[in-house]
Image (cartoon, rainbow, N blue to C red):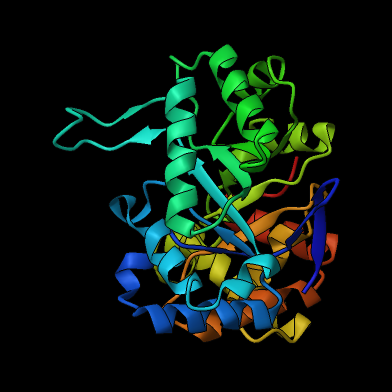
Length: 298
């Protein structure tokens, strides 16, 4: 496993483990603890969450497993997000809330859910037209000063959203978690990766395998992609085309951190962790780009 420095005293594994679908895996607390320990054995130390995952229950599920072996907390980095409010008995529509009180309230709930006294990285889940950056700044300042959150970042922010918020803050934004895969290159083309390079920050990547479409989609681009991935898999002597995709992401100079989203198969997680040992050539990287786009570079 490779590791990357995110901030002064914070290092992440180059592959992170995500828990968006944790409740779908139907793990007991003991089984989940085993999954956590397997990830750590593979060198995956960064665990990605959000307050809303599992309809607000995934954090507590993870925390219950962690309470069985509290010593593991010091071996991992916990990332979580806030800001999205789901429609419910108390909310008539899904909406975003980035008020100072709400951010602090959700962090307090996350700390209780995880059974920890600090979050390694807090992300604002999505940009909002009603975001008051002064309130966000006040919340971040209080959470940082109290030691409840070590670092801060954003998720799904476009460059102008990122720059606007940064201009109000007294603490740095150390990452932007965005979607990226060979089948969804939007954030390669809209300035997000360029901004990350300019800011010297390392983006986290969700849905690196396009939600499984890389394996199953019958669209022309996906079929061409699989054929090309298989060629490169053989050249790299990789175990599967998934490792080639992770390597494609890891090759980017911004130092991307792909998030594994499947916890039902330990073997998929191990292969993701092992993908850090493969290095694509520029030619191989652009073979993948060309397969998806259906044309050569300009």
